[in-house]
Length: 406
Ligand SMILES: Cc1cc2nc3c(=O)[nH]c(=O)nc-3n(C[C@H](O)[C@H](O)[C@H](O)COP(=O)(O)OP(=O)(O)OC[C@H]3O[C@@H](n4cnc5c(N)ncnc54)[C@H](O)[C@@H]3O)c2cc1C
Image (cartoon, rainbow, N blue to C red; front, side, top):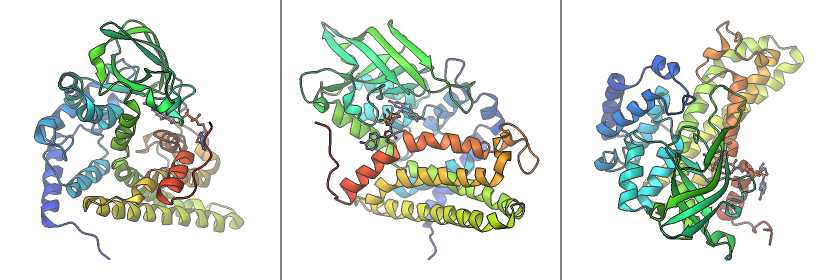
């Protein structure tokens, strides 16, 4: 079997690559200002998002007025693959571009689209996503942050946690409880909350990788007044919108995930022969088995992704889509774990010399150990692996539902 795209898709790819070569931010620019610790998104990222928007390359599958060029699904697939290969992110405000802007476009008022969604797309504003709370993560519907209507505004009290980018966001897409007297899924609404509103406190959480550039935060709301017209969609209709919001994220995240796995496997291939030779003879067979297993999984992830994509592009539904998040995130984790184990104690030298003598920190995706730590971002966020397995069991395989607490 030989997978290949037709001429129109290859022409689209060539146009993109030519444009990228002329316009992409250099690796030096991105490395010089990688963080948001200065209290705002990196300047290069804002400019780059705007440049892509103006050229119709930010969200190619959307219409031109929203930063796209009405690209077909196959062209969009090629676009995502090429960006991932080039190592250029579309934005550093992943939740803003991937979830908040599309959700506002789907459910928000004209004024909200103009003042919030379009500003994200033009790189003028960054947004964070206020879903998770200390006692409401996997069970999001248990959220307790309250919004009480008082005249022409809501008053918000409560706490969010793991809010990516809240330390530099201009506004937050906050899921709140607006009716405590109905079943928990039915009393949730979404408010757009400006982060400079009085009563908001943001506390960055220490991170194991790059502690100097915190991105996860706790956010506290203490009597925060939010104009009533910042309600997104209908009152108490937030649960349906939450599912819509996350569907945006699930869309085609696997494309860059599969690309990341391929790159990691290429590095592992380079290192593996010498590493295996250096092992005691009785440990070699096990190491080879483990590398072979992740190689098989990496190949399976790619095939599964193309199959899901082909079904979706033909307008069908694809159960494979539900498997992709679970399988790509766990395979990526396994590759890093196998590679770090193969390095043995050397893997623990964070920022030290890597196997080939270069500074380990210069590895494109970080050291193997850093990649292993970072991989948990994807096996936990947007639904943990355990939750994904339950979803697959119930919705894809049709197995009996697991018991739910009353
Ligand atoms: C890098 C990163 C970025 C994030 N960014 C954001 C963000 O921007 N905005 C936001 O709102 N949230 C964000 N999150 C939070 C994320 O959505 C939650 O961490 C996730 O939903 C899990 O919730 P929790 O941490 O409360 O864990 P819990 O729900 O408390 O789960 C703890 C453990 O119990 C398991 N578990 C829970 N329930 C079940 C069950 N029914 N069956 C089997 N096992 C179960 C889980 O799988 C997990 O292993 C982010 C998380 C990470 C890691």
